[in-house]
Image 1 (cartoon, helix red, strand yellow):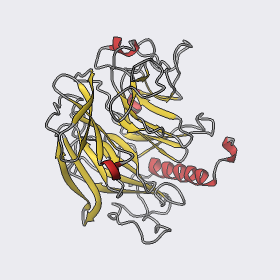
Image 2: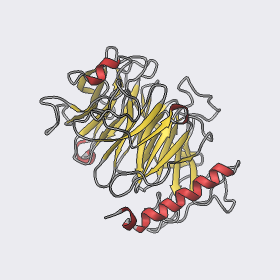
Image 3: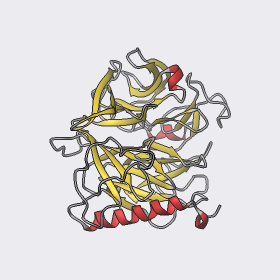
Length: 388
């Protein structure tokens, strides 16, 4: 199917995004409208948006779901529609929702991971819920321990069982993304931990995207024999996601010049430290999008229909990148929420189609407000994200 014959819902979302971005860029008040009723029944039971409609900005609803968090890092949804959220520095796993109160969704600490040794950019990072959670109750976490970064599995309230250890740690570039792919395997993103030589060494776990089984073993059909490595040549990947046709994309922190979104392909080399951004060296994969680091430094990545949405720390915005049916970029990326909520870290697609976004203003590099850090919900109306 060509880009010009995409599903009509994609075009409605595109129109909503365009209108939303235009309104946000020109309106200092950045106002939003009320969500439409869920077609399946009653309106969703979420708190009232913090602003009302002004006529032109009615395509997006931004709702503060929870406040007073401390460096929320990873978001993973449970079968009941609630979410597990990690806090990097405290080592806490929070359950957010589905129950709600007058001030937002109910937030409960379900576990503090004692093994976490938080320092700098390290701590309790990514989290993933087992695809068979209703049967096995398993949750997977990526965290910084005393001597390494590691991946463990646990049942909430139980002791973590490490399944992959020896991922390099440092005060910077710890990676930390964790998610099950459409193939049922567990993917993790690692950083170079400040040692750029790791990224090109297939025998080392730093600067890679890894693909493992739920037992921590190299997944079948990995590109390198008996290795968990799926792709290499990364500086520091945190967020990644898949499109409906199972193509994988990841957002990459550059050094001083370019931040990137890459299509991730089995066994390919993404160039670090030899190149940053696009190059003429055909040994390496070029990014599909690159931005100056001042406009990006993006951490989280999610998909809404045919749009990739990435949450940026230094850039203090979301970038929206629309893809064609063949995976190329359609038009120019658009920014959203620029400088409105400060540093943005995680973005996750909720089961109802909305996007959950976390702020990261308590991470030592932001300017926190009294209610930071916050968890936001974005709904694109008119048939877009957030409609059941």
